[in-house]
Figure 1 (cartoon, rainbow, N blue to C red):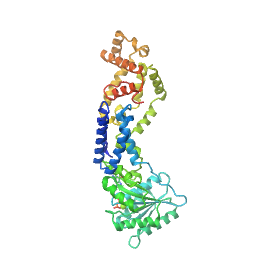
Figure 2: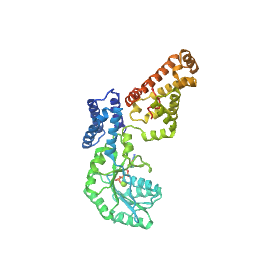
Figure 3: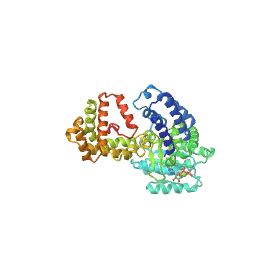
Figure 4: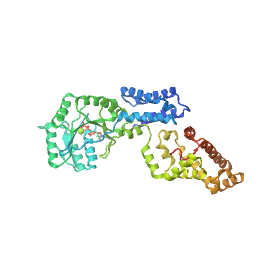
Length: 454
Ligand SMILES: Nc1nc2c(ncn2[C@@H]2O[C@H](COP(=O)(O)OP(=O)(O)OP(=O)(O)O)[C@@H](O)[C@H]2O)c(=O)[nH]1
Ligand SMILES: [Mg+2]
């Protein structure tokens, strides 16, 4: 999903992060690249223009340039705008008291209406609903059978009538009556597709909508058709009282143009997304999660959850307090390494951090090796040495090197790094923190494990 857009955007942000200092002109340049990436992703031109204008306004401001990590701040500005563009979230179908909720599906041929009827029924069955499907596509003889088969696989009733004399609005009306009799609380109407916006068929859906007055008129749109999808959605929206959109085949959509433009162009929320051919492949649509995916933020949410699960809050708190008082010793250092290790393989952790995954490609194992070496060295120190590293003289260094199986220069290097860290902590302020994080961000040497993760 969205691979090509994600690749391009993370590339832009990586280049921005690589600049030592961000200026108005290199931010502008970065945003020009974002613009190109969005256009190449087939996002609607008007949407792109408006988006870039908003992002520029926020990104050029003082807050970004003076921010602790300017490039991350820009990622955040872009992220917030993408969320706003696709949101707010509305994956709901409110239940009617006393009578079944009626959902009507509409959309172009092959967009996924029939499949999505069943998927939607399934999704709401999991929430306790009793759905019924109504076969109102009388254009294609096989359509009724398709829906019956899907209904049977779910074990739910399907209202179907022999085609010939009946018309779709009547089928729907009788379907809703039957659902009421059977005690179903959700009725999903499958309608006929159209190749283009064709007057006769359009009149048919409109007639169904007028006769049955559905609670939801949902447009089913194939994400893989990009701007064509958006243009047809616009036409449907002009003629039908749409309440929302279901975007299907997102699993096959590398570009993301439809997902990013639909809401802005139609003003109607994307409610659900189809992410595969199986009956369970329908998900509620959440703009924030989608934006994280698009920006290659991997799964920040699950990273945070993982950290909450594994990182011992007290240890973290103690560490933070000590850091402020500049009382960090090598024992704390060791504990922080332990905390990092508890979270799992570094490479997979880094993959979840925005922009870091690709930037630090392959660095995870290297850093883990470094941690392991540091751990071995610190573990060969006495408690006293860990608490008061300044007592570690030449003789002790040699002993520690021997004990840990590391070289003397490695021991010296660790002690020097630690000394530098303390020095930096002495004038502890956000600026020093930023400098430290930047140094760490440049990779290679993990200056202070735990700080980056907190
Ligand atoms: N990969 C993938 N395939 C999907 C998704 N949704 C639907 N499809 C496939 O798209 C094809 C068309 O789906 P249908 O549900 O028959 O489409 P329709 O809109 O009812 O088509 P008509 O009735 O002809 O207008 C089927 O092969 C589905 O399996 C999805 O989210 N992902
Ligand atoms: Mg169909």
